[in-house]
Length: 443
Image (cartoon, helix red, strand yellow):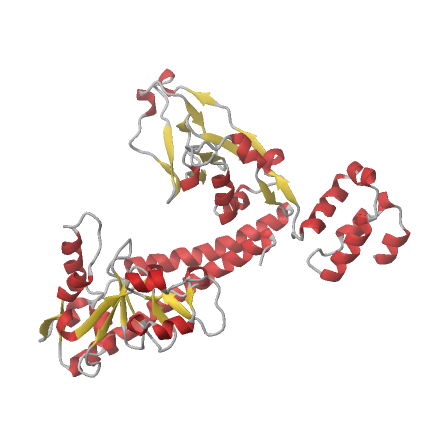
């Protein structure tokens, strides 16, 4: 290839340049040197040469292109009340599920204009796109429509796979771009021209299809794991035994990261250095076990952790979320010297870990008996939260050691399975992130 580049005419060397791999340092250098010596007028005449030049300049794996040349704006508006005999299917957009069938809305009863929406078209709310109000329509109903307040567009599918674009819309890069378009906190109004101006990495259509298949496979794993984790229920008949009911305060020490500790000493960071410890937060604490995905971790330097002995975490401690969506979820600390209390979680430290086994208490905290106490408490507060005082007054049922061990043995396999599913979900998400990082050409 090098010989062809050296001896061939510039207008004839494109097939040879395309054989070079931009991710291979040596081949990229060969191409970069050759293209840099070409006349700019020649590059301007050949679109492909300019694309190659841009790839080499940015270090990206794929050419960066503006969406403008790959989108088709939908301008097909109708007024359903003009055709009352037609059975219209009205769609909506949710930041949680994407595009859905809005059964409650009867379009023909209004004078409002609607867009006719085809399968594989995107719909977004220009005023709420920053909170995820955008979706790819995978429905294929007859006469499906959506409010005229939305912006609707399709992809030129021979060049841009809509599923590939949908993946990019869910990336951090798109959200950052959308937020940049908000003029200094003024109400969001993300116009179609803004959408057209967004630059994306554009592989060949075959490569897009491969990327979509890779990510959809991992998403199915995530979805399946989440479904099991959400629907799993403990068989609580095992707790119908003789036991002593005790307040947590009588069997354990309960505390959280103090305000002065956080303000004066704690400096959390997203990248681990040397022997830093993990500062656990609410997103790390789940009933299925600690969630230790890289994207959810923050770190605290060991010197500070050693200094703040009161909020260090040790093997056998239990952490519980006291505010937010995961309120009441708990996890057992599996090892010493690795973890420290972070925001929004408390630790429960048993006074005598030989009389009451941490593994048993961790299981009991997940029962409906215990969780119902939490629910009845937070119903009476404006901001759902658990103070340390409230946690200390919650009660647990403590059987003898033999029974504790029996319960642990009986449920241990199930909790290991849940922890395995949580890990599988995390690994699938990491694979998705790695695919996206490769597409964007970032580490």
